[in-house]
Image 1: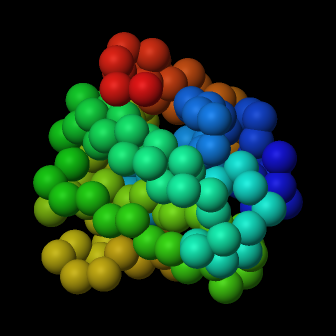
Image 2: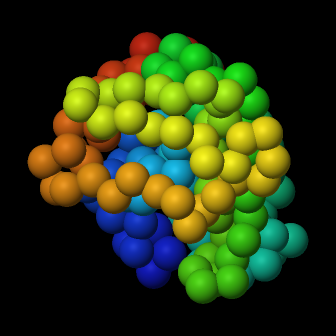
Amino acid sequence: MNPTIKKFGYPGTLLRELQHWVILLRPAQVTLGSLVLAAKSDASAFHQLPSEAFAEMADAVSTIETALADFTAYERINYLMLMMVDPNVHFHVIPRYATSRRWGEIDFADAGWPGVPRLDVAVNLDARQLQALVSQIASKFRYSTTV
């Protein structure tokens, strides 16, 4: 796996692996259910991905949106390709909602709603919480039949 994927906690944050992509739980939860969709390639520019990766991306997006709709009942979803710090092709997937979501004892507000996501305002989970959230969200991906 490329350095960007490892930086986002792979393999501990892995929710689903496809041929060209991995879907990871984002360790800093901007909103509840924030993910990373990362290309497994070493590409550092979107156009460098093979055409098969673009075709498979449609399945990845459908899987993500189905699983997150079930998990967090988001109102909107944002895919942000930032690649300023982490150079390999990846998207931050941020489910958006007007009212807070609660998971366990933690409230997750969408600090940027209804504007752009506030990546600087995130819930940082400890290792136990992170693994519990990975487990719970991964179960939603297991029931997805898209991929």
